[in-house]
Length: 88
Image 1: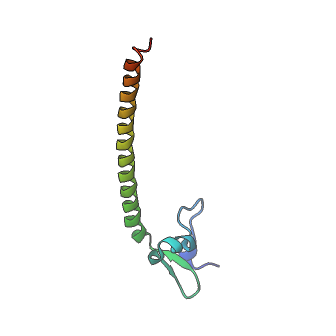
Image 2: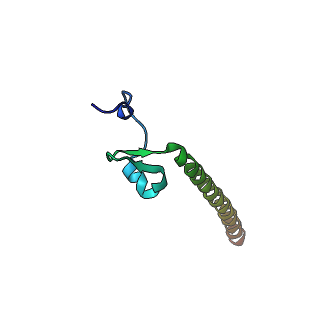
Image 3: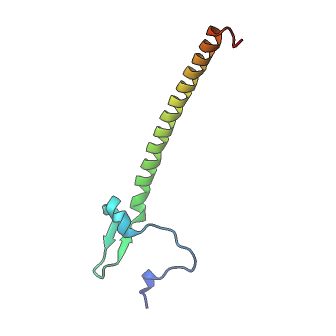
């Protein structure tokens, strides 16, 4: 039988695969003398929060770039319409 700390609740479990996470964040994964891995989830949270912040900055930047490009396109379309005599 598994030790009490290795028994899981019934149903679907959510989490990370420690061996995979070890390749990305080795400081949050430990391995005991019997070879069992564990994850310090509290150490993962700050990393995830910073990643979300970085993504939000990238999204905001791309959104601003998109708005600028839309404005330029609208000006070009207006120019072409005016140059071609109002589209007639």
